[in-house]
Length: 415
Image (tube, rainbow, N blue to C red):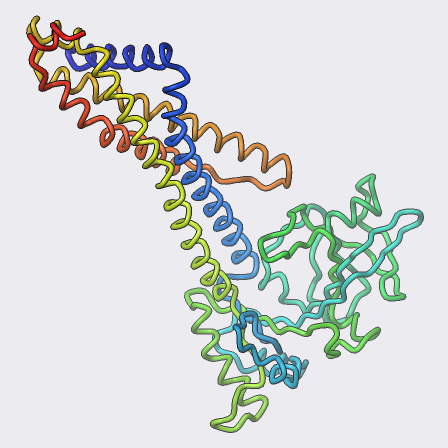
């Protein structure tokens, strides 16, 4: 009971200091507020980017390997001329991997045709991406359909004139929501829409099915050369359950070298890309951003801590008479120490709470401006409040100790 009474009294003293010296107190709390805002803001931004990155990796397939001409990652000495001479993945590579791989749960061959315009009556969808894929695409990529269905095995083998369209395309061409069963003209041929992707928006890699039309590869083979370099042919191999992408990559390297008859000692003429390679690189960037946030925020918090310590020394000076009276009436040293220490903590908590409030308002602003849900989890909130309490203890301990050691007689006689 004594502690709670002391805590209540200290809180009242703290808010009384805020009320009587508004400008001085607010200027002193500004450092803590900006520091907490910077640190928690950066941590929330990193958490948001990491959550979107994980979502992208999950969509691409955590244990999928992409057999391509170009590597995803480069450096300062990127030998682009060497990669330019490489052959793109061919259908022969795809069929051989499908037949010989022991680690693959699914293998798909895919091409991309960019920036097409699709019309239906008076409605138009621009900037459409056409993906021609083999049957296992739904096993390699993660996606949801809001309407209809995916290709059957018969659709894929026969090259049926069917398509699954993105949400934005269906919304633009068929605003009444009746896309299923309609026929659209793609590459000079009519296709029947059998499915519509769910709305998803772009991920951190820029991938999205919202403006995509997906068709069977065997249908596209009758219209275009699906092995042409301009369509960016890609073979995607998804590993079996329990295997990592590294396990799958190890087998694929040996198989591709065998399929393309690459001699021992010769360099690979293909690239094996994994989404985890990009995520690992981005994790390094996230780590740097986190450290930078702590450094910048740390300086602000340090300045704020000195400000709080200054307020507490001034508060001790202004209340010296009261301290003397309290001690003459029997107040123990720890009572005086806790009184001022709790006051310092409360002041820092006010600054921290304002900083967290600013972060929350920033998340709302970002959501409204660019439609990205910023992650502000309970862990970051607890970290912000804990940091505020720590700064309060460090800033207030010396003034509180000096107050507790005052001589009651000298304190009462002071002006």
